[in-house]
Image (tube, rainbow, N blue to C red; front, side):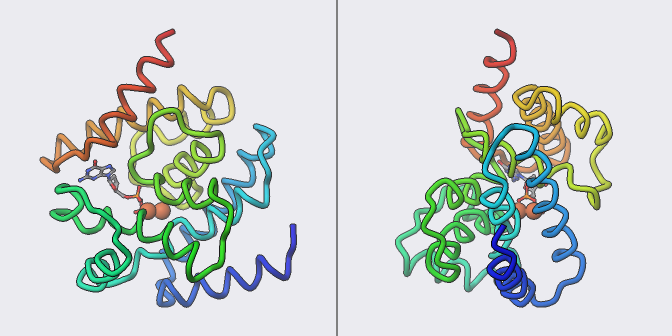
Amino acid sequence: MDNLYIEKLRKQVKQALKNDKMRFRHTIGVADTCACLAMRYGVDMEKAYIAGLLHDCAKCVPDAEKFQECADADILLTEIEKKNPYLIHAKLGAFYAKTKYDIQDEEICSAIQYHTTGKKNMSLLEEIVFLADYMEPYRNQADDLERIRSLAFQDIDVAVYEVLRDTLEYLKGSNRPIDTTTNDTYEYYKNKVAK
Ligand code: DGI
Ligand code: FE
Ligand code: FE
C-alpha cells in the first residue's frame, strides 16, 4: 500500500470524526477487517482498506448539515432516510469520498454508499465493506458475531445473507422503519444462497 497516502487519509478521517475515539477505533477496525477479507477473496487490498477508512466519514456531521449538503449536491433522499437521518451518512460519505478525499474510484465510492443497506448483486469489494462494518473486532452488540466472523471467510454470500437477516430482525424488533434498499438486498441474497 502507499503508506504515506494511507497515513494522510487516516489523519483526515480522524479529524472528520471529530476525534470521537470510539468511532475512530471502529473505523480502523473496519479498514483492517476489509484488508483481511480482501486477502481472502483476492480483492485489491488497498482499495478495500481505503473504503473501510472512509465508510463512516460523514457519520459525525450534524443532521441539519446533512440535509443541507444533500440538498446542495442534489442527493436524493428516501422517505426512510428523511425520517432516520442517521442513514444519510452512507450516501453523504460516498459524496465526501469524491469531493473531499478525491477518490475517483467508483467502486470504492459505491462500497461506501451501500455499506449500511447493502444492495442487490454487490461486488466483492462492496460485500467486504458491508461485512467488515458488522464484524470488525471492536463490535460486540450483535448476537452470533463469532459465527458470522468465521462464516465471512468461508462463504461471503451466506455471511451477507445472515447479516441482513439478523439486521432486519433487529430493526423489526425495535420498530424501526426499513428502507426498501435493505429489504431488496435481503431478498436478493436470500434467493442467491438458496440456489
Ligand atoms: O455507521 P455504523 O454505526 O458503523 O453502522 P451502519 O452504517 O451499518 O448503520 C447502523 C444501523 O443502520 C444498524 O443498526 C442497522 C441500521 N439500518 C440498516 N438498514 C436500515 C437500518 N435502519 C433503518 N431504520 N432502516 C434500514 O433499512
Ligand atoms: Fe456506517
Ligand atoms: Fe461503520
